[in-house]
Amino acid sequence: MAATRVSRLLVVGFALIALISLMYISVDPEVQYTVDEVMESPNDFTSSEVHLRGTVMEGSVNNESKTFILSGANSQIFVDISSVALPDGFAEGYVIAVKGDLLEEDGKWTISANSIQTGCPSKYEAE
Image 1 (cartoon, rainbow, N blue to C red):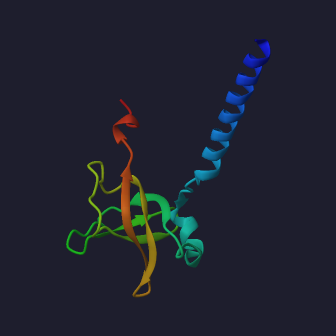
Image 2: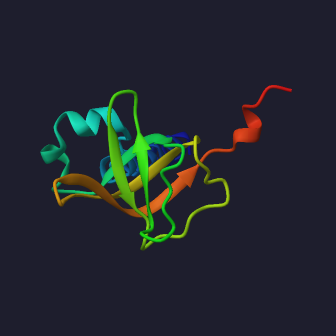
């Protein structure tokens, strides 16, 4: 009876290890870059979707052309938002995350946004 209990525990243990291993193998971590990191060598990011974080530049949101400028410490990049809805927390001066394809259009680098995520600024404001 003890041998069957041990063998069942071993089978369950190996099954759990196998499932956890498959989970780690199949989940590809998503790296989030800053605007400055992407703009150091933008050609390296044109082959796949890029996920980056930056600040929406004050006065840069253009509702007619559906674009805005995402800025880092030293660099800026245009963001095309024509194919995505802006989230409720989107505002100039806020830090946001943008996923999309990096393209060079008319000599300037542009992200064609697939999704935009904002944080919750109320959590970080001083009382």
